[in-house]
Length: 161
Image 1: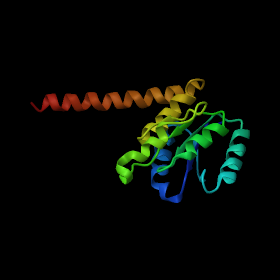
Image 2 (image 1 turned 90 degrees about the horizontal axis):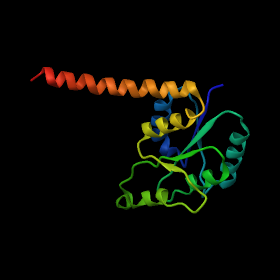
Image 3 (image 1 turned 180 degrees about the vertical axis):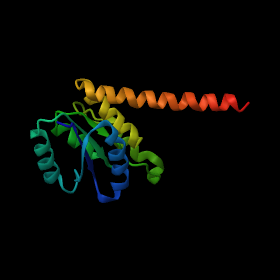
Image 4 (image 1 turned 120 degrees about the vertical axis):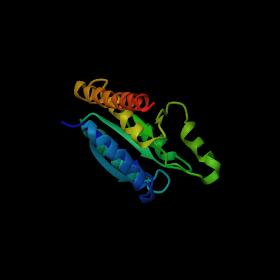
């Protein structure tokens, strides 16, 4: 049974950001579901989605995408027992100050914060890999490929001297 990565975005405007996370999650073998729900505007809808996902016995991680006032990450974290990763979209609005809504959460609410979409997928894979040896091996292969790329680039630069 594939682990589940639930990507919950605050609005359709976040779809490009969500797709980057989904694309980065594919090599790890996740089943990815992208949903829309706002903690401010459609709280009951979000609650119902989360209740349905929590009833699913598969290992899972939630990634929330919300900017400005990021209630979605805290709301999600308070409703689920699985890990939550907040991955807000990059924003120039408010001079970047809207990131603070993702940094400070009330006590007992602890979503991780990762700003790079591909790294949110990697963290989700590492979380699942704590107990899933197949996922752990996929993370290891991913990391080794990154290392080999850097070593090859170093050799190329050294050869060009």
